[in-house]
Image (cartoon, rainbow, N blue to C red; front, side, top):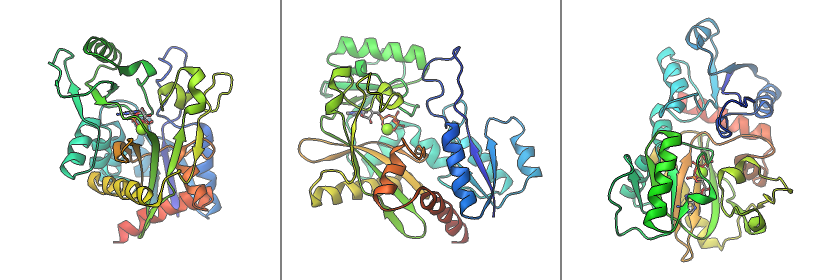
Length: 332
Ligand SMILES: Nc1ncnc2c1ncn2[C@@H]1O[C@H](COP(=O)(O)OP(=O)(O)OP(=O)(O)O)[C@@H](O)[C@H]1O
Ligand SMILES: [Mg+2]
């Protein structure tokens, strides 16, 4: 098969804010996917999705399938841009369509769908101006986060606010930096879990990954903040979370968490792959924080491959499974 791999490369540019490239892919990830696809016998053309001539590029270079990991350079609907172009050109691609990608990048809209489907998600309020009256029924502490970002951009440990004054101050700070609506959500104390779903004709729910931050307390970071994600594994900074895969859960809870992730995957309309982030509260209720239809695929550091390895898959098998999912769907 002739496959194009669409990506946005992480660059080094000191003139940009430190989290500017956090969503994008490292050369290591791009090379790993390329080599996995080649090992499975495919011809691979890696394509930077920021190429302004991408439409004519695809017109000239017809491929059988696009393996899409492009997060998009800018805009609230950035993850949908490559799929929209590919739909227009009638080129099939792996993963979710424009609608699911745009929905999942809007945390507040996703939560409305989850609520309608009876899937637990923390209670929240969206601040579009920063001067709205606070919903008095929300229970502090709250965590505030930009509504249209991923990769924990804008999520610092100081985003956990304990009263109204702190809330408005942090909401306004974030609004200035990210120029978008800010979501304030009840902070769920409990286990941090993430669940990978793959669909290649049949549905595969990978072993749940539990991320334990208890050894990071010296760093001042205690959840999956931007700093924790960006510098994960850095011993000097004390940012060494412990991964348990499968998660340390009893059988019933394990089943409930998996069922919740699959319901989320279906409610948002994801295809082929997704990773749902969940916090399990002290009563064992799995609260869905968000769903990632384009989860990171770095073979060493990303959560999704860690879960695939725990299921006995090699990296190439994971990549091939995503590709097969897209082929089978197309035939279906
Ligand atoms: N309501 C909450 N209660 C407790 N912790 C939370 C809550 N919301 C976010 N967090 C913490 O912040 C992290 C990042 O939040 P979230 O997953 O919503 O952001 P993101 O930027 O979309 O993440 P990703 O890097 O997965 O794309 C979570 O993994 C969790 O550790
Ligand atoms: Mg997340």
